[in-house]
Length: 209
Image (cartoon, rainbow, N blue to C red; front, side, top):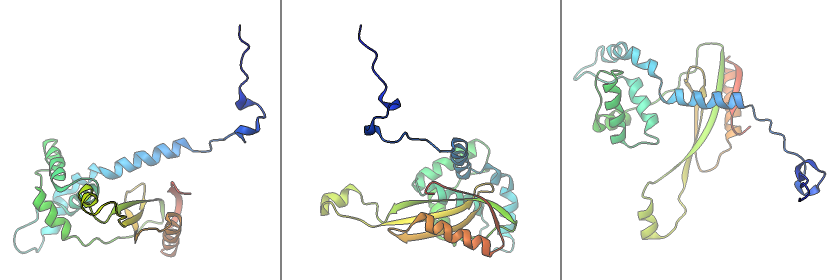
């Protein structure tokens, strides 16, 4: 019978170093991921579809709008990962689920998105729970064709960091830079902006702090 091996993790073996203590708050981490999913599909916006359209079309000359601005803005968020025809497919499924009265085609989506001039309105209430996160986007999508024609080249990317109210899902700030940029520094800048506008920060979420 072989002797039982000693668990080196419980010994004073210098090779393993200090024992790792996981301080991650799993409950908060799970909540952040759930809120992220809610942000991508805020179905409560469909309840105000016709009210928003009535406001948009009031006094408008020419053909009236058929799709609310909130829905176009939501599609613009999806467009960061999906092409215009895929957006049309999602809209078709939302129509089949009776969440929207009719769907917009990819041409309409393109025109409405390119006419957008986004503005950020800070909340009017006194206290928020905010979160900040960043991601990078390639400045070109030529992909393998560029590599095939010109060889492997280093392409620049755009880094975007957003800060939002995690409860209401309202955008608070956006920062964009061509390569680089520290997410913690950007987040700290907008925390100060909220304070300057008299908004108390109850809690702040970030995966870089």
